[in-house]
Length: 139
Image 1 (tube, rainbow, N blue to C red):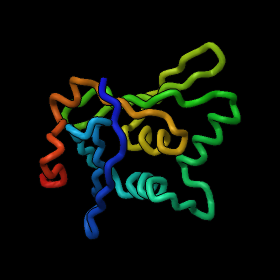
Image 2: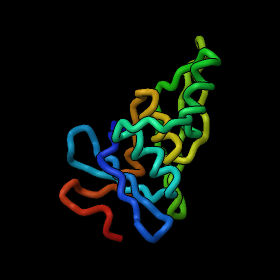
Image 3: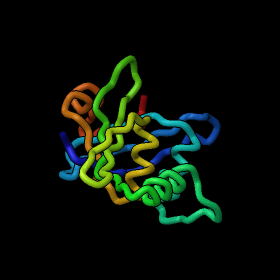
Image 4: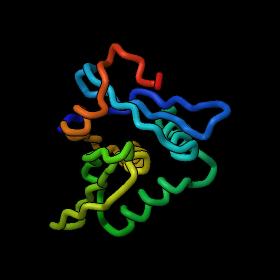
């Protein structure tokens, strides 16, 4: 697994698709993930440090997890099938580890809010990763 961070979020002005670019910690590889506009907005607000007047869905998820005495330990993007990425949010509740199926965009937005690390499997990077020198927004 490679630990990643959000490098940038690019939003199409007229379209409904946006892309979040993850970059590995060493800065050598990137992973573009095409996501919806709402998720892109949620990620971009957190990256920019902008707090909305009312909580967004991902803020609500963070509050619920915390209120239940659990914490997000990491998120993992582990598979790619038919151009769809698959992710998980891993929670710790007491001595238990709980794996929750999640869209990568939701997992990333939650990771940013909780400070949890983002990991991507080697398999996904082999299939969809690009060199950091390439422009991953061109498709």
